[in-house]
Image 1 (cartoon, rainbow, N blue to C red):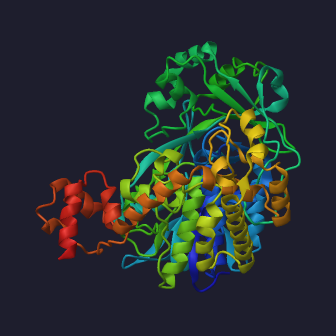
Image 2 (tube, one colour):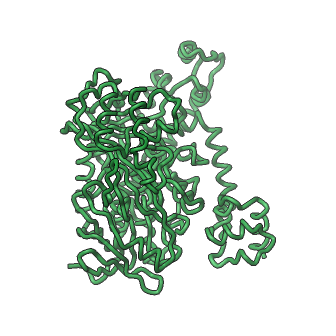
Image 3 (cartoon, helix red, strand yellow):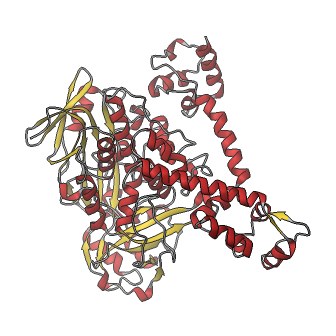
Length: 624
């Protein structure tokens, strides 16, 4: 039934597991993806959307490295919006509303195309570990499957408990059993720390019972883009509308009356809630002065009446959910198809991991996704990709693949997790990245695709597409830096934009660098239009060049700061470095450094409690 021994066994088929399995198998490892239910591979357990602030950047990074989440989103999207276009390009974030069923369908479709990947439906209940090295897995059905490496992507299933009012249901997702055994084995016999976290989901309702005329329409972009840089997916030609409405004082009063019946306030839930995606009852409790909260009404797909009520995550009973929803404008005649619920589950604090996401305690055992304390499809998928890559490289004794903070949001995510840990569900934001001007969604392919090519995840064909794009960007930049605008040509446009006139010829670059001048304002000038057509500079090329010109100062400053940081990144700390012997280090620094075991001086500098003077002392001792 199975190989004598797999290179890699991936436990769990969610967003993290799917990316891990596809990455390792595409790189050449014989991989087994084992999950409790093959029908829910890539299941969108919460809202049916991909991307958003910082999350959209990560999906584009996954695509640039050779992952599949962006491609799957393109195939299944029903609406596309570029968020934050009114702000600078560091904040632009793609987001797609997806067809829930299509998303899961296409994940399985792409996984099944891979001949290096086996799929099997069963539940892993424990690991085979010998001499602190993982050797395989044991399943609920009594099977023992050998593997050189194992990646745990259990999501919310480890001792998962669902809460709906007073009801407590053992499960990792509604109507799906929890997983017992793995937490107990790793904590009892190998000393790993674990904790409890809580997340939740909103009710799904019948769209036919909603009055959309009382809501504000949220349309997709008139010229929708894609997530994938090079995969041949078609752009959307039609889109489904989303809507926005708001809670009110009647809703808030009803929820306040029922605080004592919410598992969050009764103490029934022990897990820590996500700070940035709280339940409706937590919102009303925390922000008691707010008169309303937005409710996003999101269709679940092309051909269904089911609607997701984003912003109304809750653990209230079905009756309280129903009565509360009815008081929202447009929901007066609502019918619930599925109630919302809270779920708490086990996670393993991620400071117990190496930068590769491998356990510091058990060799060749990797942790990825919500098991590391994160929340969100995008964070999970990014970790899955990196765990799959590094598991493959580890068993082949090749150099690990680690992204730095100035190279990708994925690098920020993993560095934050292993260096700082997390005591609440971790969510990515642009504000977490020091170099967000460098880590834009539009240049993810330029940043990362060559790396994906070097490790074997990007094809020769995709590299040629990127090389052609880079060549055009350079050619367009050269044109803008060398050609001039005459005053009589450009002044009418400058007048229209309330921009100072010119009286001598000025470079195109100089005019475009003005904040009030957009690329669209100048490309209609005849000679420039002719050059753009002749060289086939598309909108993507023009946008890249415009960003590089307008934000050159910011970009150069971040590059310079990144160079300084690189010096510290290159100062590696031996794994067996004895911090306890350095008495001149502060006691807190010794304890923290010994616990986290940073791999470089740069990582050590980001650990809370390690001061600049501690770093200076470390430098001296490392020099010796």
